[in-house]
Image (tube, rainbow, N blue to C red; front, side, top):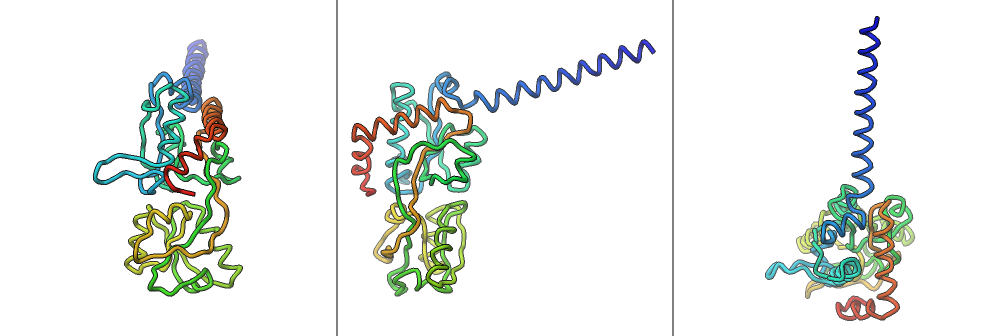
Length: 267
């Protein structure tokens, strides 16, 4: 009987320690891995950016240099944190991967044409908007398509997990067009599908589409659904979110944000 009580006591102690250990690990992973203090201790800011959006975030295949409006904006955040814009590392993301990479702590923040929505705000901290765009439509000049109504019974290429699909579906119903969609991992894939005839239209935000215009394509005049871009950070990292927002606010007041928009020609 005495041995049983001793064994039971040991078992309770072991189980208690196990739960304590689990709690400690959880607290560490959710609270400090990408918080502002941890970022400062690490010595650089990890940022998820697009690599396939000319003027916003684009990796030049010839030089491997990553540049664009959101690259410069991210550097401004790094400068706010460290006093040095070069204390930053970039990781390429797509519309589908940016959320999971932020969730897992592989990046501290996302600056990647990330549209602010009420649904997304439930999962992430979003900064105030730094740019507003609209969903647009690109077609081949030879298609003869002039508007959304002309896309009746046509296929539209969109990015996985992007807001474009819902926006176009809603507008298509208003004009009586029945459209179908093909989803792709990246924008170059959609452009290739348009060139080859796999889709009849490439739809995403107009400023993104403008980077893929060539002699064979045209942007339709119609635009839909205002898209406010914000920098996203992980829920709970309120100190980082505050720093990001302060950076954007200061850049708006000083006129630096508009200078960057002019620099990259994305108005």
